[in-house]
Picture 1 (cartoon, helix red, strand yellow):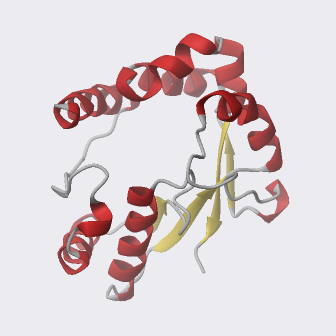
Picture 2 (cartoon, rainbow, N blue to C red; picture 1 turned 60 degrees about the vertical axis):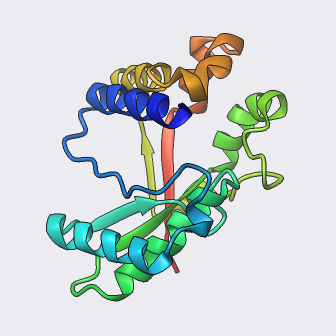
Length: 177
């Protein structure tokens, strides 16, 4: 099934990136809105308590691309964080105007922001985190994307390495409100 394919692809991408800990919450792709919020929040709270991060990088209420699962995860993280002491700082993914302009040709061809007109766009100066990837980090990111062909194959076929490196050259976040 697609879920099995995506699980294998994600494991391969995580290995490339160097992710050491990953936990499935056991909710079906595309079905998070129908999942038990209480159960999801409890699972996330338990993981946050176990690893005690100072920061959590996640989606904002719009899910960045408009994906309902991403938006739902944002809600879960916000609710789980309410019960924690100390509370990790939560940051939501955004695009800077420059990032959006870079990726716009891919959005126009592939409808990346499929449930919203465009992603949340925040000027670089207003971002709490705006991390520019080194050339080596861009290469790792591109290899991780390539390890997930069920999600990225068309993107990687339509656009060259230069485009991908420029489009995914930074990561930007704002503090959750």
